[in-house]
Image (cartoon, rainbow, N blue to C red; front, side):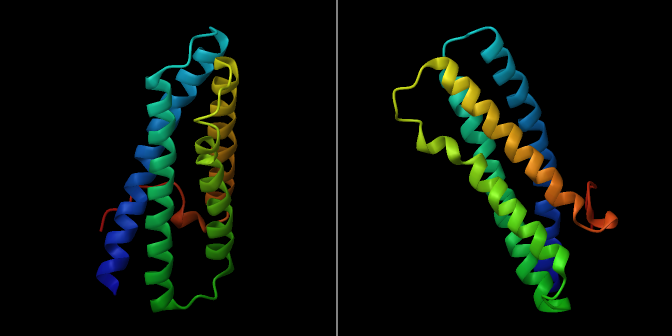
Length: 143
């Protein structure tokens, strides 16, 4: 079980940084798309899909880590549950764009909604991470 914890912790740690890089790129692209009144593009759609997929993958690695780690030390640590609940809400928001992707929306609405999805899910993710003990927050995990 300790091997699963190490692997899940490594994947959860490194995926976090890949997600953050994609999020920064997406923020820039969506802000520029909204301000410059660009047409909605396949690139923007792919970027939003990539962001939400990475967020879901990050959530999955975290859930595996919680189950594996909890089976060793117990499941009674409140901050892990708070982290899980907030990150679950953030992940659901990050994937909210799937609900409108086939609807006929103006391009400006797509840019705005995509930007809102990214910003709100990132704010929630940061809040969820801050709830963790300091030694488990924003750092690379190397076994």
